[in-house]
Image (cartoon, rainbow, N blue to C red; front, side):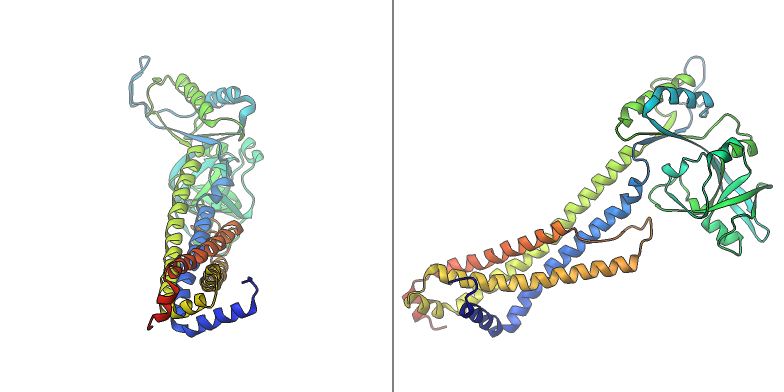
Length: 418
């Protein structure tokens, strides 16, 4: 018997049509299994893009240091001593990192200040930053521009306004060129910004705050020669962990902090953060595969069971075939073909339907940055892998019942009353 034997395929179709309800229910089990597998894998990859996609657009090889209070007395200084990042720290770290250094970010957090326009006023988070702040915290400029080095060097009285603040204080979405009063001082708005990944923040989001140039903020709030936050970014080819130990040693030495006082500063490593997200997503992907494959295998087992029932009903027919000289492999081939036809028909429809649902989700979710699920789509390798599983599963689903049918002797099968 050949694969493209016309008579064989006609007989397969007759057999399938003869059990329409049973065949449809069996095919639905396979359809639902492959459909769920495609949708789950697609959403899993979309979730991966949503959770860590925006992280990868930032510096993934950086470390953030936030001074707190010392917890140990050292060199005549008491414990519980507050300290800040100072210019000498920036100079020492820059010299130590050398060619490894990509950037340094400084920031001061000033809490909630009274912010007002000519129309409205309110209290909002205020901070001063250097231009590389956008690398550490995911943001997007909607109107205007970001803070630049000229703003820093000339101590310009300009600011960035969060999108939500603009909506509450102005009657226009683009107030660039207008003034904003911050704690009684006027600042020219040069840009409107928004947050792009709510999974990463300093406890507040860019759309809810006003950002000043770092040097301007130091003048306005009397924060000369100090910073509340210090971020060091390295080029990707260098080890951030080793560099981090060197930076901690410099900071502790400069501020006379006990070498074992690990509570004197909060340290956040983006390398560790990315690794944590990666491990989390690996676990989610494994769970999705287990659930999806389990659903698919349940459908394949259903086909195998249906084939067993079908063969039991066709015992006499199989006996006559064998008595007339049909070879065992011919019977096995036809039964396996019937099972494969049911499996592949339902499976291909399931893959197409699952892909269509993912395309619909893409359309509904749009390209919103920072979304939990972004651009859900199943990779081609996974789609082909699913088809391969279907082919193998369909063949096994037919082979097992066929081998069982051949154990019955031809004469006993002919005598069967069913």
